[in-house]
Length: 131
Image (cartoon, rainbow, N blue to C red):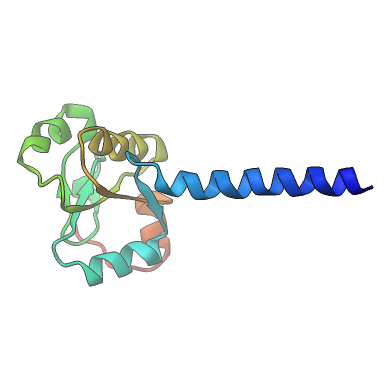
């Protein structure tokens, strides 16, 4: 019985230390809920909001810039962006926003956030939209 408890204890410590270590890994972005994103935007007026979808003209988060991932707009914009700035990336699908957020991180950007649930989650939360 004691060895089973010891095994659970060791597994728990390994799991916990792995979680802590993941937070410290450089070169990753942070997923945020629509509520967290809204708070970030309100508290950081210099935050750049990047819509990487092809549907920008159909609706976007107020103040967002459009760097569509599919046509190379994001890659073209990267040299002009401040790598120490704060960025919120979103799309209309997870796969595209994940690619875009990771692209920024791979290019050396240090404060990259990705909107969980993307634009649909923002709309569902009842937040403002521009067209």
